[in-house]
Figure 1 (tube, rainbow, N blue to C red):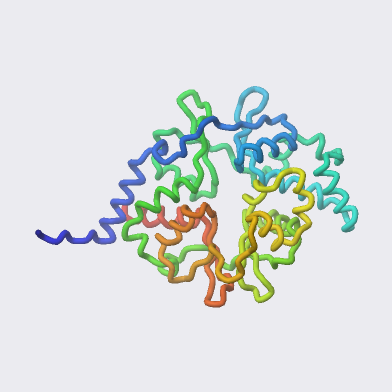
Figure 2 (cartoon, rainbow, N blue to C red):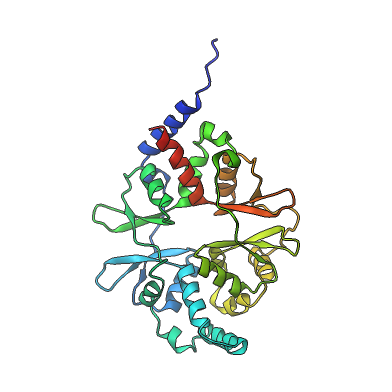
Length: 325
């Protein structure tokens, strides 16, 4: 039998290009039962309860006329609460104010609707960007590379029928990378540096305020030696219910993460770090296997050098396939 010659990197990447250009979004989108939608006039409290109850991180927003006007995420609500909360000056009134917000005694919060939240976060709120089931994975990658986190899938009547996230594309790519997967993070110059971190003693609400200020959706958590021990992300808000939100926000980040995971933070070897020499395929498998959205690049002492978000990977793969068009 003749040995088949391994594909050259160029051939392999042009093959990857063909795959992403010819696979429709419908093939990789999670088969959703029913799309959860929030109303523009819903109270913020009701919207947060809808997200938490359905274990979802975001939902399209529909106004009274039935038009879809944006996407609301738990982080948008958190940002709104943080900004209401930071209007107070001293620490005591701050604590009282957050308690009032959570217990529905803060008049601004009680009367706030989803529309208020979208307007308040106008610069950072996710736009309502839609795709059709027959659009290609390549089209979705291009939209995600521009900075979108989620796309609304619509039918021929322009009605939303589902959501496509970056995770779904990452999961798909993790099985199709080929030769590209053997390249290292260093070779591909992937990830952003430096990495924004908070100490594990930082109050959780202050850590979320830093995320708000830097417009990022996660921060690394480090111990007293500046070694990485975990990650705090806007997705952690999903695990908090309204009742415990007040107490959680005043815990240290270390305690907050431990309670989120219901287990102690493992200070030896966090799940979420890789070295400069780690191969791209490993990073993708880690992300899709553990449902995490960012992975930290660390040195031999676990000190964070940079962070790789899903968007960085999608941009990198997109650039590689574009070069081979």
